[in-house]
Amino acid sequence: MKVLLVDDSKAARFAMGKLLKDQGLEVEMAASGEEALDKIATEEIDIVFMDQSMPGMGGIAATTAITSNDKTAHIPVVLCTGNEGSKLEQMAEEAGAIGVLTKPPQEDKLKAVLATIDVETIDEDSEEAVAEEVVVTPAIDMSAIMAEVDTLLVSIREQVSGVEQSIETKVEALSKASEKQIQPLQDSLKKMDERLATQVKEQIAQDAGNHRIQLEALRQQVETALDDIKEQETKLRDDVVSQASSKLDSLIGERLDELKDSVSKSQEEMEERVEAMQAQVAGMQTGLLIKAAVIAVVAAGAAFAAAFFLLK
Image 1 (cartoon, helix red, strand yellow):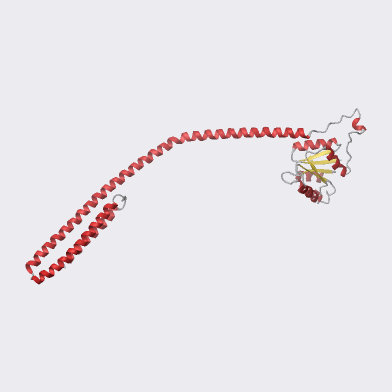
Image 2 (tube, rainbow, N blue to C red):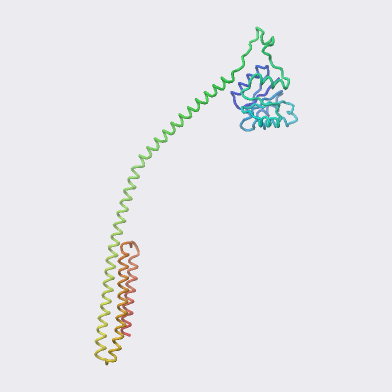
C-alpha cells in the first residue's frame, strides 16, 4: 500500500516516514499541498497523511480539494497537526478527513488510524517480527528528535543574536566616526554664524548712527523754518503798525493771535513727531530714510501753509 506523506518540514517528513515504513507501508513524500495534488493526479495513492499548517495551500484546503474531486474522493486523508482541539477536529471532518493525528505521532495511535481504514500493520509479537533472520527496527524517539530540533533552533537564535550585536556595534562605530568627521564642519558653521551675527550688529549700529544724523538734520531744518516764520511775523507786525490805524492794529492783533496759536500747534505737532521719531530710532533697521523724508515734506508743507496764511 502506497502512502503519500505531505509536510513542509523535512524533519517531520523523516520522522513520520520512518514510522510509516516500520508499519510495512510504501511512503511517497510531498512538501506542499500543491505538490500533493500533483502526485495524486499522476500516481496511485492509497492513503494521504496531510500536515495541517503549511505555507501556500494549507492542509484543510488540500484535503477539501482531494475529497471534493470525484476522481480522488475515494482516497482517505488523515490530517496531521501539532495543535489539538475540537474546533480543528470539526474543520477536518468538514473537509472530509477520516481523522486527526497529533504530531509527533505515537505508534499506537498511528496503528489505530490505519485500522480504521483496514490497513494491515506489522505486529511486534508476530512470528515474522521475532524471526532470527529479521532485524526489527526500534521505534523512533520523537522526543529526542524534537530536543535536537530545539537545540538547533537555540543555536541559530544565538548566532542571529551575535550577528545583530555585531551589526549594532558596527553601526555605533560608524555613527561615532561620522560625528567626528562632522564636528569640524559644525565648528566652521558656528564660527561663520558668529561672524555673520557680528557683521549684522555692526551694520545695524552703522545704520542707526546714519539715521540719527539724518534726524538731527531734519530737526535743524524744522527749527530754521520756525525761526523764519517768527521773523516774518515780526516784520509783518512792524509793517502793519506803521501803516494802519488802531482798528487795524486790533484786527492785526487778532490775526497774529490766531497765527501764534496755529504756529504753536504746528510746533507742538512737530515736536511730538520728532520725539516719536527719536523713540523709534533704536528699532529702525530699514526704511527710516523714507519716513524722515515724509516728515520733512510735512514740515515744509506746514511752514508753507503758515506763511501763506500770514501773507493772505
